[in-house]
Length: 553
Image (cartoon, rainbow, N blue to C red):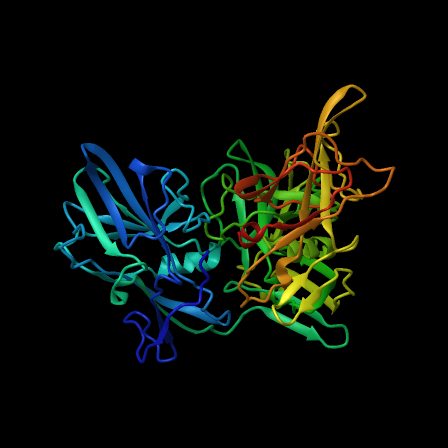
């Protein structure tokens, strides 16, 4: 696995479209040690080309067989400071002026697209290539000659989307993938460093923040009240299921009719929790939503009890709609009674547990919906796009020092090793059982993998375990990870038994210790799984299992 230290050059001038004397510009041009790129080929659909020295978009024949090649590449965007705003990004790919390479050929108009799923340079192939999106894609005209460089391509919108929605890099593809046409550029594994792919970035200090943050030193409280520039909220509507309402000035939960057609509205909103210092713990969190005392707005109406739920998938404010709305969870949801009058504010709703879950599992914000989504009932509050700043949604966070951890962390200064051994308060593990598929066993004192019978019924047990990897310094490179599981030498426990070789696999979906069951158990992947031989004794400990690749993933 390659790490991401990158070759940086400070530029004396900005990009052409940066247009700012305050902009800082850098050039990223990673080579074989730091570059992250690969081709995929339909004729060798399961072969990885992570160390190939070219990036091609190709539709050709090989020994009479038609095939397609595409290329994937990614740059490290973590070098953009959080306090800065991207103002320009230009991508350059360099043709190969070498008689031994395949030159550009044919009617080879191309796309540069944003990749929307994670991928690994050493695992990617045609069959498992990640998905991409055409949103803000770059269309490039055909090459004018055989070794033309494609320089200064404006990918600002694509890079901004990577910052907002996750950086999985670019994909190069022909617009028309039929014979005969080809593009060929140098990859980061090419022999000539001057030909490595290049991304120029310009950023400048963010403008005046419109988030109101009031800090009360006595109790370390933060009041977040973002407005149009920083607020992150949107409605979705079942009657216009593909339309985005990211700039609407209301947040509604609605079950109504429009021109005789029944429809439902829900609202999503998110606050920036990065304001919480890493050494602090959320002691309390209170959410306030403000009704709209305006004759032109839709007032609260009907039997409108509601839920505030935690969202569990990422979403984009200017992309979300009814059809692609993210999942949410009922875990720690807040139930609110019906409004008592038409413009009532919902103040100081206790969302402490949900905010703690966001800090722990990922901050995708809140969803508001009616408990009963049948006509006629409605709630309406101001969004962060409302004309009145005093009505913006508000989150009050009160913080305290982190409570003492019961995780044993033993550091060895010589080789910087850390041992994580969490106990009941901070450990995250649970069993699931096929014979009790809706029951949670998050407080059970064993982790079992079992295929047995209970009262004559055949059942299966599996176990899920998670450690807090936030203890790893951000600049650290993982060299080894060894997992140890300890058997219970206790006559009252179930000892190891039978022909019991096992797998240790990586979980690829979020899960909650207090709600996981057999029926909702998360997906896992066999990539880099560890296979362990059968236990040799009934109470054998499994020590120092090499899970380095799993933890790196």
